[in-house]
Image 1 (cartoon, rainbow, N blue to C red):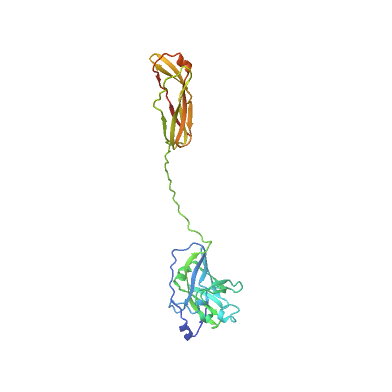
Image 2: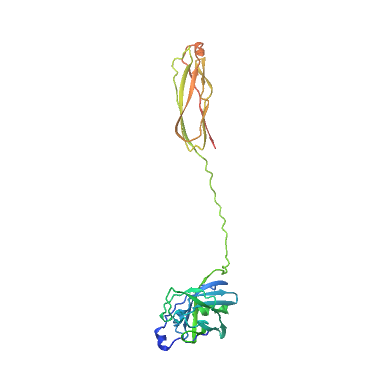
Length: 313
């Protein structure tokens, strides 16, 4: 780029910019599209920003290929304080010099994309935060120019087409490249880890209580009518997840020495399928009066057995 000297010595002293700090590229970037921070430094090697640095948007685009780095940057167009000047471009005849070779930049004054400016520059009528139309400049440089751009040692020049109407020289500095979409991602190196684990089968272990009378006394049996006795069976169960069944035989025998007396039990089989704090079941023992009438006198005793089973779902 060819940028001509912009202002007189007195004005130059008044508008001298501040030293810029560089951000080192962390690693050689992959091919693709990036954005970076761009500044135009004094050509005297001081490292300070040029007085005309504020007329440039400080965000540049960089497209990297195997062989080239295409740099696109933006300058306010028109300059707000000189809007009647530079109708054919704010800067012209822009060229970069890399290793003694000059690379001309192409200018676009038609599309005029709006860009945000971040520096106050009263001389040019620019305030930080202004959104201004811009002239677009693009130059294709060798791929290995990145280190020099980072160091701020790439020289450029441009004809400043407003106010000074002369050529200004710069060093150009581009730092802090960030992928802007389309950049090739570095190849990923993956490793697999095989994971083996065992989940133990958890077998349901219900808790239940079945309460049955230990004994009952039928008293004196009647020979004239059936003797009937209703008895309770109480059940409590938790974590059931299945069926709890209680059963009793339908008949039994009372004995007195060698003499016997039959009885019946209608309890049958009764089931609990849900957890319960207390459920009362019942059965009925019966001794027929006809059987008592024909039985020998005596004290008769007997036993009936209840069976409790649990079946999981």
